[in-house]
Image 1 (cartoon, rainbow, N blue to C red):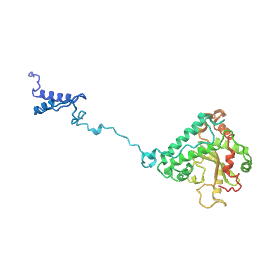
Image 2: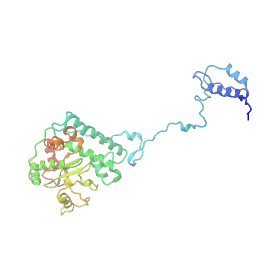
Image 3: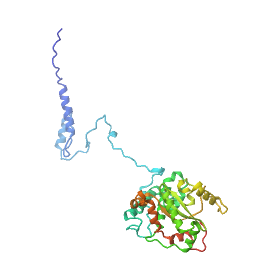
Image 4: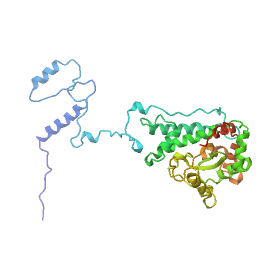
Length: 355
């Protein structure tokens, strides 16, 4: 069976001019900035000639300055998407003028440690533990409290006001941490100061000897498995105790409503420390007004910072019994400003009343 030969199909002549006109229109839409776009219309040649005669070299603003987009690509698909920043922790949007305010500032220390803390921190260690860390705490605290009732409160007050509010936990952490770190640096001096006799007598009554107090400080700090602060507190006339707090935990009774961490390494055998706390809270000398469960009436006098950023850079991890947190605590003891501790305890005032 044979098939007839098919001749090549020739394009229709009437389609060629149409294709040429479409291509010419597309090419004419891409013009140099100096070219003046002119609409051509085969139906009105007189109007075209008139526009050419009146041409003064200016650009006609009535035409778009960009090629027309394909009808299959809506312009909304090509627009950049702007990400709107969101504030964390449920805080509402505030005017930008308020966002620039800095109510809280890094406080000044009573001594110049620009060259480091002698026998305790190098210049780099001090910069990390104080300058950089406090700046971070203050920045975070300002960002969370600006425009609120807390923005003009001191860090201790903020910690106490937010201790019972779970949704304000970040504010509590930053405020309490800033206060605790400042308290730590306030309790030391470049060379340390002698212990007043009145304070020595009270401490010996509570710890049997100053050496026992020193040893308890170092051993308890070493036993704290995790960062925090170890406090010397006064729970009443002549009654001094050591109180560990973890992370940004606060020693103040008003913050004891907050569920703070407990480490059995420092709680004592059979919960003896817990029994002491409960007895203080519900004993015969309990003041009027309810205290939080486990809370005691006390006054913080001194604290040791056990956070790694305070000692790791200069003292290392302490492998092989060299350096580490224990060596840091031993050096810190030699720099305690006991005069300031005595002032906080009230032993230098004859009319002292328990905290």
